[in-house]
Image (cartoon, rainbow, N blue to C red; front, side, top):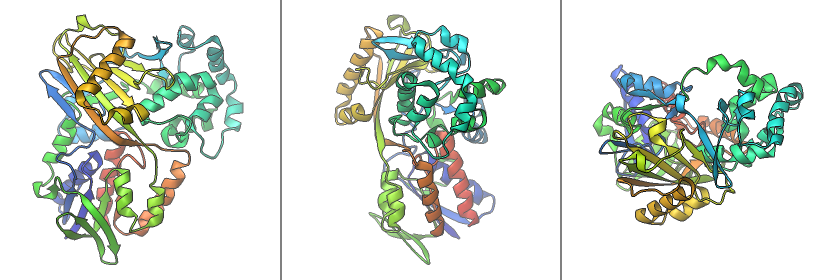
Length: 459
């Protein structure tokens, strides 16, 4: 019987264990052991349910156009739980000089579909609006000059639309999603569809307009009872004796007979290892096996602090219509972003209630992580009040710290990952999973984990 170790019980590790469990039920002879250092599974996917408030402590949804999370949810019998974002009310603001200015309707990241909506926006100067219009006329130039090598997101966006768009939308959007600096993030790794659009059309605006008919679905999808339901349902389908909580992998070794995994309790031999631990942990475990792989796994990571506030009476705390706001790095606020949860998704609050989530990232998150929950909540309320006005005492407060939870895909990331994968294949039975390699979203993690589990069985 093939023995497979899964190191790390976040979404990727749990999805791998689930897939292996399904494969054994289909007649494949295998046994897995899932090593998780903490007392719970799911990693940063965590849902707090208090009263009728549904508060996500990590990601609150997945991108609808990536199918792998939806397919898994339906397979798990959660089809009736699938819930789209309220896109009829979708509006995102950017904090500019202490004012919340709405992004133009029809934007996909920093690219507009509708230039008339752009003209009606107060967010951009006349010069930036003209730069957007000029981008369409520069299609052939942009296509011919598209670099073959990687570059930063900031360089890519600046080439198309100018510095103002980088500062007002590019920087806060990328910080919110990837926790990183647009001047250092790899455009090929984090905006691959836009790179492909440039190579085909030159103009990103023209490319989006050509794809208009494909954009009928809502942007985000979540589960009615919360994202953690996806994890819970997978865990319920994993053989209980496969799961070892509070049991961290301490060392890893490899020889012609396979893999040895050592914990504080014992050393066990396995035929394959699905490495789903955070990149920092994975790197330290891999280093004795292959120094070059460990070098390639060295990457910066951003921390996050999430604070959720639930209010029973939305009439006492009004917010602008829409999904929330982004905060550019030089705004003077500690905040990275804020989501108006009850307006983004249904069924998140009691009747007439309000739910907001405040996000801190980067240096601000690092400073806040050592603070107590009450202090962090007080700082979050103060920062929100500076932007939204007086805030009543919340009925529910939730604080979560996620240190170094977002690996930053720097320029050249795809080349490094290609070399890393080549080296991993030389070690029979090793797969690298998680948000440090091929995507940070839940669908990406599910896709990779299920494929790796299938490959581990087949190999």
